[in-house]
Structure formats: structure tokens, C-alpha cells
Image 1: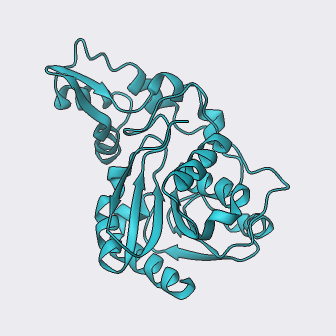
Image 2: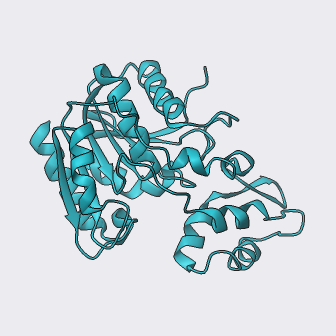
Length: 259
């Protein structure tokens, strides 16, 4: 069994596992992790399968990703963990909470609901798939090519964090784009209707994001009866990057109340 790659920040304290979103990586959360380590948490920045430095697999589903996290906990002898997941990572955290309750203390879900989502990433996946590193030799060239598919510079900057040097002079992607391009349906998957977790949890929504709607409240309560909800004003789906201080404070205050 392959174990997920992680960077652990902090030597002591409550274990807090952070799960990034689709096409992201653990490094996206390094600043927050350093700050949480300063106030008493040992933070595990985890790369999910087919992302970052973790293993690649043709098999890709939330059930498998939640099991990956459970295996990680067993490998590091972790129990009563706190888990925070953004977007895809939030859905993984939900599955984990329902399937491995004995390992969990509380959960933070960032801007994702337990419902089914229609695929949103077609153009991005199309662009990433067509990056030809026999021709593209620099980050700027990759950015220029990707701009035909992704208009927003900040989104391209996020995606191009996946670039690395496979060998001198040859760029590559850390994400397993060949598998992920065909897994949009898996990324949008809803929780099964009989799943439930009674652990403390909080759903944090960006006010300007449409990932969690007012009409999703009853659905969230169905799966997670102890769920609380918080809205970060003037923030979209990337609320932790758009409003980092407000986000950090909201999560930290909630965690302090339940730990």
C-alpha cells in the first residue's frame, strides 16, 4: 500500500491534516500551516493521489482518497485528528469522516457541499492536456499557451505551480493529467444517501462563491447533524487565499472551541 506524501510542520500538538483541492497540491497551504503550527498544531500538508508528490494511480474516487487518508493515519499512528479540506479535499474529508469515524475528532470543510456537481474544469483540463513539453521550455511559454484556455492570470498561476523539472531542460507536470482529465464525473460525485457523521464540523463558504448555496443547508444537516456554517465576506471559492487573515481567524477560533 502506497502512503500519501506529506510535509509535516510543527513538532507537537494536535494533529491537523490539510487536503488541497482538485489540480492543487499541499504547498498551496504552507503559509497557513506555518501559522497553525505556531499556535500549537502539528500540521500535515498532504498531497492526494495523482497530485503533488504522491503516487499516481489509474483508480480515482472519493472512497479511495478517503481510504488513502485512513492509511496515512495508521502509518503515522494518528487518532483523534482534525481534518481540513478545500473543494475536492473537502469532499474527501466528508467521506473520511463517514467511513473512519474512529480516527477523527473534528472536520473543517472549505467551500464544498455533499451534493453532486456538474463538471466545471473542461477548458482547464483541455489546456493542461495539450501542454507539449517537447516544445514548451519555460514557465512563461507554458503560461502563454495556457492563456488560450484559461483567461484568469491568478488561475493560471495556481495551475502552473504543478510545473517542475523532470530533468535538466525538460518540464513536466506533477499532476497525473492523463487520469484526471477523464475523472471530472468522479470529482463531482455526491455522498451516498446513507452516509453520516456525528462529529463536530464546520462548513466555511465564500460569500461570492456558488459552490455552497442556501438551499444546501438541509442537505449538509442530513449528512452532518452537528455542522455549523460560516460565511467569509467578499471572498470566492479560493477564500483561504483571497481573505487569508479572516479565514485563518475563523478556523482557529472554531478549532479552539472544540479542542
